Image 1: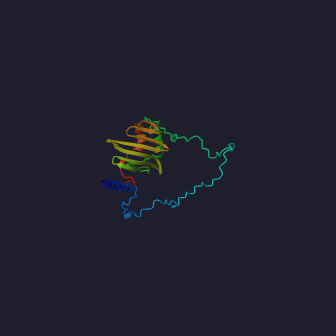
Image 2 (image 1 turned 90 degrees about the horizontal axis):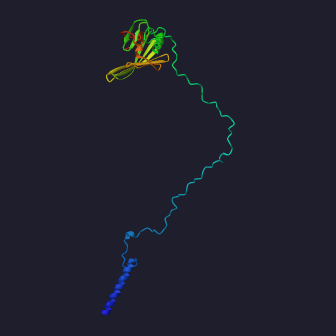
Length: 245
């Protein structure tokens, strides 16, 4: 009995061992059937269809290029080039100030301004602007009873402490001189600068003593000459000028 029981036990162990080995290899009848949702697993054995879409390579054929230029032949350098548009090599324009056409003569005679650029500048203006009648001042404008006048126009006023004016000295319908006046207050210090233009010449001066006549420094006090003051600052009583508000 003991031998038969032992043999039976050995056989059972062998059967179980074989069943376990077959279960590990997927052949055992003891395996549980797969669930229904795996019944439609795609067949991965079939190869993918790579024919679509049409991925044919585009036609990259180069355009038909004519035969390249023959670069072996030397260039003909014997014929001169077209020099019709050669640069103009004439001497540059003389940018010097034009000469004064009016002889200053006795203008500002007996004053430090005599014979200076300032005297020559305003002597030319005086030849054009020489009023002889009484005058009236309306703001910055001045009018004379015999016709000449000084018209003043406000160019801009950026603030109560800074304004720019354009003054024109007119006689017989012609502009004899213009002045661009810059009036401002900086750090509580008033300043007044002028740039006069006449006959292609320029004279600039400011209340701090800087002055240039045709680009050359000169003493600002030269403008104190009575002949010059009669033009730039005529002594006129306050009044009314036609056409001036």
